[in-house]
Image 1 (tube, rainbow over the protein chains, first blue to last red):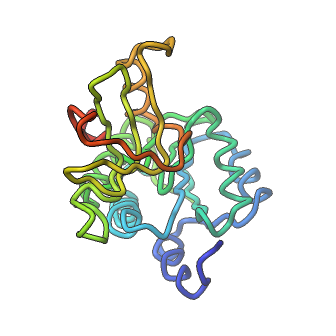
Image 2: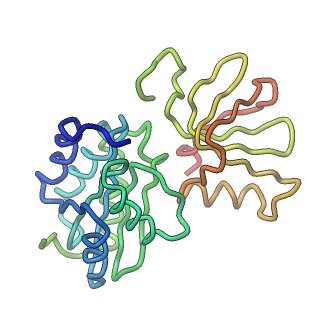
Amino acid sequence: MPYPEELVAPMRAELTSIGIQELRDAAEVEAFLDRKSGSSLVVVNSVCGCAAGGARPGVAMALQHENTPDRSATVFAGQDVEAVAAVRAALDGIPPSSPCIALFKDGELVHFVPRHMIEGRDAQQIAFDLVTAFDEHCTSTASS
Amino acid sequence: MGTFHDDLGELHGITIVLDTVDTRTIIGRCHEENDVHVVLHDADIHDSASDDAPVEEYLSRAVKFGHWARHSTLVIPREQVTTIRRLGELA
């Protein structure tokens, strides 16, 4: 059962306020992932403590790095069920977890941060993991 | 750093790996760990006696991508558990 939207809204805003596109249904996810060229970051947000303490601030910190993905998007686990299912379909063969973070390059998954690599870690550690991947796979700053 | 509910132990909410006295290796999100039992949610079991993939390969893939939640809740008696590790620390 979804949480009340008034509870979740600030958690969404933590990512959308830094320019991450929120995807609310399957069509939006598919349209986002259909843009194969370049690099795409997808953050599966959640209400849990490790999203609040690690994932969201870690992503925010990482996106201040010199090299960032060409585009970034987020879906919210437990809230936007259809959108999350569409992301998980794109992560075929990977067990579902939330929060989690996926980086695609030219349509291929090149880096994945599952929940267990977020829980118990602080934002700096998660950001370091992400910027290491950005340096390897993203060569220009975000343009959208 | 676990999540809330400090009374459930510091591993509450953390994905852990249990090595057991038998051929099972169990991964799950720890609900509670004490002298009596370990309670896991969203757990998976690798049994080296019956699974094709070696446990090292199973753990390696779990570290990289996570594990499948094949059991919503498992209660493992503490005396069956030999070691408890955080999955994230195996990376």
